[in-house]
Length: 44
Length: 267
Image (cartoon, rainbow over all chains, first blue to last red; front, side, top):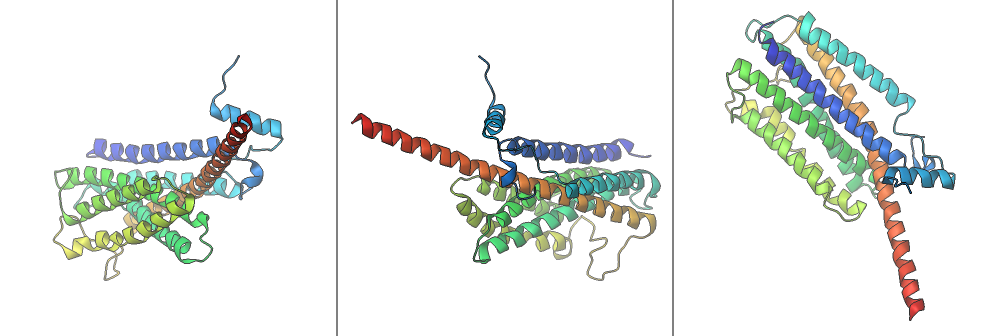
């Protein structure tokens, strides 16, 4: 594949950013969840 | 004597009080959504990188469009949701903070997607135009969109009560969304280096077909699912952060009252 470096690098960037942001969202959610009672969580 | 961090202390206090707090933001629905997202992303990689053909003009660089276009599509969706949720908070009599949290969560995700769009767009520009950046209409208005919503997120952190936050954010959310048609139609309004819309064009005659169209469609579906998954988790997390804010305020008020009583007794 021509320009494989740019193309593969771009896909890696996209999925890397998505994975990092998703991990950050889940981590902050888990930290908050430990401090809030289940009864107060409207989705449980 | 051991020292506990705030999370461990909170978890210990909850255990002592008997109130269960083990559930996080995941539910059966979000797990299904997450799995669908992962499968769709796998298809995107397969079709985007391997099964779809090279373009006769752009050659292999066309493969970047299968992530570039879906990310900006998802960002548009996110900012429209922010605007709608802002309107629902502001103009309904009950002023429910749930709408404000949805608006905030959606805007945050939209900002991440626009950042990715700009980064991948720069790579594509390097391959096709020979430069990472040009101050042309589409790129400039997209950069303006990015900065505007960063401003929106900054305004949300200014402090004050949750309703004060919600009110000022809602006004900005409703105004900022007006940039979307400007960004989308910038290639028509001004002479732009950036190509015109491939699918959402005025003549509604997509300039893409076959496996390339399908790869683009898979990308749009994948990033829409990703947006949905992220917004549910982030909105729930914001709900819990607001709950903790309120609890912290109540504890601080109770401590202040106790202090005032003690001071009174000392006199």
